[in-house]
Image (cartoon, rainbow, N blue to C red; front, side, top):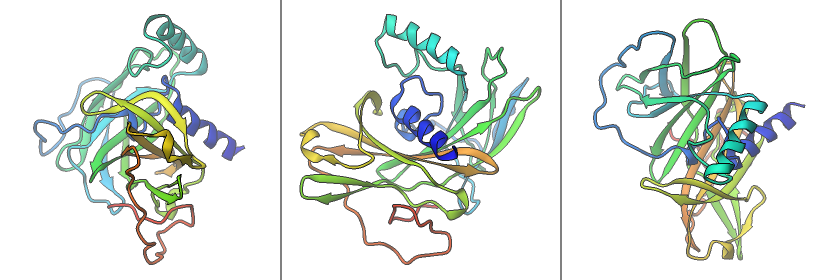
Length: 272
């Protein structure tokens, strides 16, 4: 049952436009105009915490998004509304109530909890940042409470890779520390829109590989997602990397195995 739940979460996160669990491909790789030393507190019910790497070092300037995890009925109502106005896919028109900001230099963040949330749905807290040519994200589930919430979010993913066998390309997900219990894995290729670019929702599932000739000369976004746990919470670890036509990021030789490494389908260690 756990594996089915994980697979369903990945499918929704990678493909469905109204998903409230955001992946790296759905969050623009933006840089804040300035990064304060410490997060400014916000009035009322809020979610606050720290953004770090896997070693516990604080990360400043990361994008932080908190959104209401709408139940199935609420998602359907918003999807119908979006279909009647802007088509099947939308980034904001059918999205859940959300708030966003950036982490401070000491990794701290504070955001007002978004609403309305009359059903007392849980919240999805997503943190994303650029790592070299890629952008990576961690999304955790934060239960609804009467007061404020606090969470530490660790950015664990590295860059996704592709392995070439003739015209076929096989996706190699980033290696995650074993303690995060990475299990189900999914990958997609999506066309991009905007500056900085984000996935526009026209997705091709490529978890089991794809024919590189379908990409032609298009600018596509390769996104991988893995389910797991972090800090006792359900988590989704994702990475996105731009792929242009026949050009693709090669797979490096596997590094020496460490006790942090997972035995999953991966051969590049996470940054941080």
